[in-house]
Length: 448
Image (cartoon, helix red, strand yellow):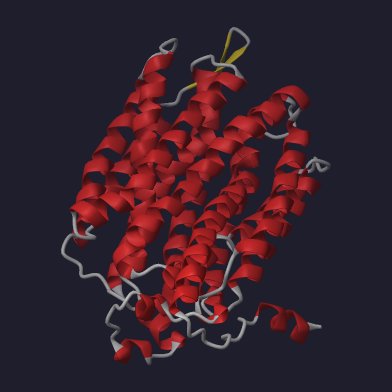
């Protein structure tokens, strides 16, 4: 049984090489389009199954099912298992059939969402949401490997930016569609809707994600694009290249910087709706709509981030990281300290937060890591950065839940929250992220 399972995930053998140049050009064009569309849409659906719980927090608290602290613990379970899973699965992805690997993750994540609609126990929620985190970690690294196999170094930033819109597309769909389902049918059916979308995604990935050019009988992307290849690097084993990443201080500095920007990112994703509802008096749909603005805006930022760095900064990512790091910290501050009943300021702050967080996450949590790693170890480097990023996200959920739950009081029979400690925590993480990234200003990319 185990051998059959292992065989299922073994990469496909290279097909007989095609000789006709026009046929090669035609297949390359078609498959490259399929790769960018499938990875983008497929991974956006991953997010729907990952963020569904964030929309349910206030209805669950209002129902008296869990406290704020318990909600934070449940949310952190996903982040911690995701962190470990992304590290482990990142190393496995470099050796796996990426099509089947990615489809499996979203399929089981969808099943877990379907089950959660029927469970009410605290420990059951922790276990199931933690398992969801592990299978969610099977999504990003296959996308990274696919992009490095089908797009050359010189164009990778542009297409990585396109793919990174999947993060924000998934967030937007979650905060709009899932919130709509919850508002009219309750939080239980919100989980069911997310699960159905996940099942559809698994089928699309199995059909339209192609493993590599060689499996399709095509030459490697470097040969197809006439790009010189350092044969000494190509001859190294995957294990030696992966081990080299673990000893590279640049990768770990980048991982820490990424973990801090994930604190800022998931502070809004995890608690932004709750903050707007309890502190500024918005309804659930109004709060979800405002937070969704940041996700939609982030699509613009991520879409153009790689393109801008490729075209205007010769592939260097440090200048955009500095500029948009400052914008991120400022916009987050405005959102948190803007008084109630000024929705347009909240919306504008979320526009700038979304654009800047999209660019920061695209660079710090993915593209810069890929730049500093060999192509054959793309999954591993994303796993290293991923474990740090989601440990940061998990710590954020616990600390934010604690700061919110332990800074409230009862005034005339109404619960009143004091959000200042939480705000300092979020803004501090955003600021430290880009300051730390500045230490990599002159680090050299690993061009392959």
